[in-house]
Length: 289
Ligand SMILES: [Zn+2]
Image (cartoon, rainbow, N blue to C red):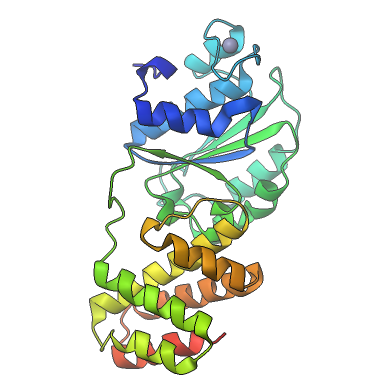
């Protein structure tokens, strides 16, 4: 079944209106949550809004040639990019090609739309290829990214997109309460400028492997959120909104990205890291303000 505006539930309708209201057409949108099929349908619905010949409303007219071609998935200005069937991940070269093609003018619509399908299958180095084009795409180019969860999208990409969530449920990301508490205390300690406070906040990890991994993941998300908030985006971790705002005011984007990178570096270390007590100390060292 083809998804139309009328088939959307209230939450998705609201989300769509938020994304495109007032003639606003963000140059890059991330659709996350829901099923792969829902994400794809939503991506094409949004693409249809972009290419519809009648741009007097926020909804596609569903009768012009562009709308019809979109429904039939044959619109020449809607380009879907996926990982190759025989590969586990996107090919970096394919994304370099996307960047080149993004500078070519549309064939018949006013906008050329690239759908980058299922970002959880795109490695960090490939996502990095997209940074520049996402920051300053030509006026006639738009990107629609889809992903299982926003967690799979690196912070620097996330801060450049408008986010469209399908089927947001409470606690969907399932953050561990204990981890949230430790990240909260850690952020307060970072703002207090007493190194000792960071040490005591992370002391609660107490060599606990799972908790350490949860805290590291949450810290990475937290710093990514801070960058997003600083750039006018929405945070992911609703449990830590006021902390995210405080930390985003207190540090430069560069510094926040540094913390984000540091946390990801430690996350990589946790794969087979034998000494979790030592890792707590490393977290403290990497969060030095
Ligand atoms: Zn139309």
